[in-house]
Amino acid sequence: MTTALFTHLDAALGHFSVRPLDPAADAELLHHWVTHPKASFWLMQDADVAQVAFEYRKITEHPHHDAFIGLHEGRPAFLTERYDPARVELAGLYPAQEGDVGMHFLCAPADTPVHGFTRAVITTVMEFLFADPATRRVVVEPDVRNTAVHRLNAAVGFEIAGTVAKPEKDAYLSFCTRAQFHAATAGTSSDKTAKAPNTPTTPATPDAAVQGAAPR
Image (cartoon, rainbow, N blue to C red; front, side, top):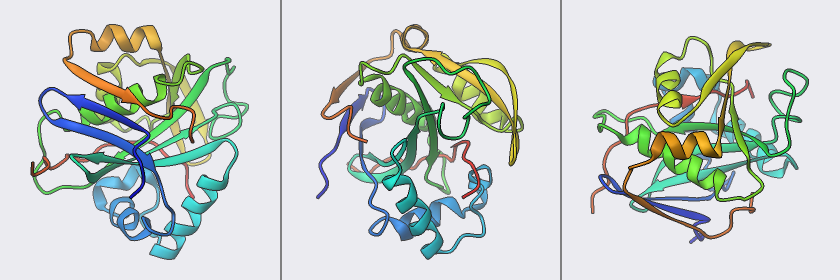
């Protein structure tokens, strides 16, 4: 069993954790997630299992991009990617600063949404990223049409800085500093444990959410 890199306790929904993604072992699971109709903004709708494994092998072997599986009460529940926006996704599109970290996340599809689940997921992802002292600001570039994720981003402290034109989409370039995140989530009862921040009950059923991704 892969050891969790980070754990987070949500007062309402329980334990969340993050582990490294295994491109071979996780390929079928990821294929189900990324080709689901609710994951259209992930831009992998037509991929087969082999293509998913290939693309995530490239990510896990990349020096400036990595990926993780998120668990809720020990069961896979979301996917998240971490990248250097000065070299991946946003290279040359904005004035990068030291300590910038890019992020994507995708909640697993579900028939029955659970209120607050995606908020708990993005909070877990942000806590994981900020557990690394070198992270000063999280950068995202969601599709301008993805109104659901814009609201979610705002809820955890992101501010839209402007629009950037990427080959696959027009995106809202958005930033969230450590201080902005803590201010936005102050009063939330939770606990978290960072185990390796620098290393690239029946669970509730998640609702779907997608935080951008480039075409693979």
